[in-house]
Image 1 (tube, rainbow, N blue to C red):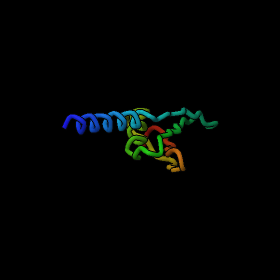
Image 2: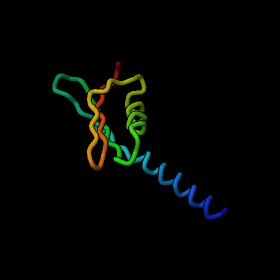
Image 3: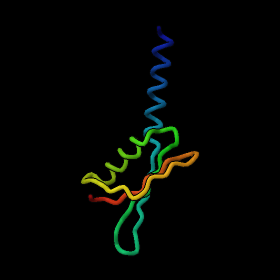
Image 4: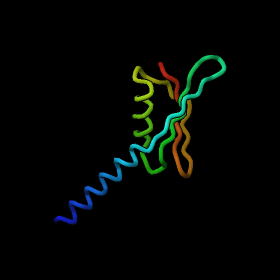
Length: 81
């Protein structure tokens, strides 16, 4: 029972670590608008990317593009609806 709890704790810690593996890059467009390129690990769900988008744009955001590659997911957004 003790090793099962340890395994469960390690799995949860690993999931928490993966959830934190997102980056957001601000992109200033020539027309004065701002976009964000959010990159998430390939092993994470899209929900992690969407959560990061909500952090960058607490008032809401518009999805411009979603892309999933071999080693990461990318979400391009603009703030506002």
